[in-house]
Length: 166
Picture 1 (tube, rainbow, N blue to C red):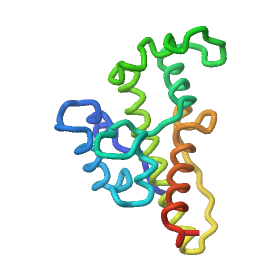
Picture 2: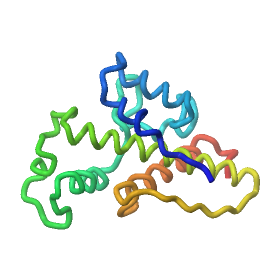
Picture 3: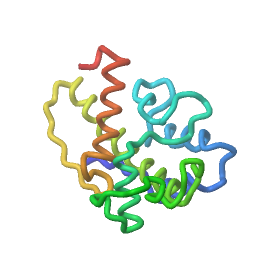
Picture 4: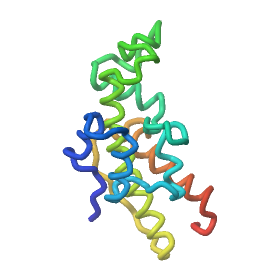
């Protein structure tokens, strides 16, 4: 039995102003083993963009729409006339309420995805052909977004940047 869910009190700190930058927060979470450390191959799958200025976690548009739907009640299966209407904010409002909630959701997805990917790699190296059962909520895996997307991203980066891992 392995837990990979970042504790709620830790996740809640993401959008608080306790840190000079979110980068300090991410470094602390990495040092506690919740996220990949800078310099590890899997770290390349963590953020939208690379570089010091990037503090937005990587996610997909589909997952963002799913989370917005779950939070707002908007039906994601109905056609929309204006995509800007979905979040109630335009693209310039990176720190909107929905955006902050989505980043907190992604933090949990990335922590679980990192744990699962790490276990899969560790077990593959040891020659184990294990199966994994992941217990999580709908918003973390519906339509193969969230945690499955994070696991795929981490395993892909590990394969690309660490060819010794098969």
